Image (cartoon, rainbow, N blue to C red):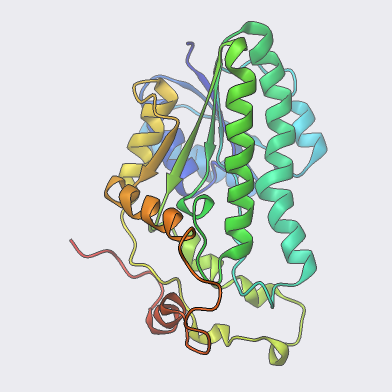
Length: 283
């Protein structure tokens, strides 16, 4: 493996932290950011940390942006760019639902197709998808986001099997509740809806992300390990202590009854009403 990585969505959160970490580990990092103003911000942060980044505008939904990277030879592609659309599946407007899939699924897949062809021709490379624990299970008010990440899970699963004979590895990172601001923004996304709030089934002014959240260091460490190949697990759940809980939630669908507890509020909905935004995990 060489040492060139392309990271999408590097302007904030996990993408930014991983970009800076890899640059400090002597990788050539091409950091794709959605909007031009993020270029200067990330370059300044890199300079502050004493590392070099090649920061480029890369909106994964923009065909012209994707085309500029179609001839790029990279050793690793980290598909990190994504947005989260919160709200009940009853209330989310059509345009917001479409945007969720354009950013999280369609754009990244089209970029991946370009990069994967060049990796397959070289018979070497690694493609990493920043998925989510939401790609394995689904909670109230994150159904649209979860659906997009379930799609990424299916795509990554198929792609890994297809590219195996070409020497290209595929892996997923599955973060749970981490305090980047992303999860809390999901629960504020209703503010952009161009619909009558009076028609909503739920009062989103009273609802918050229903989990306490961790610092991001474990996700950064695991992502760097997957990119460098020191971690070769296909699926990488963080925090690791939540992996068993994820398996139990996935298995529970086989025994849950469709009519159980009808007329009663689901426990996680109740938690969303009780929680405050940005609550850190204890300890």
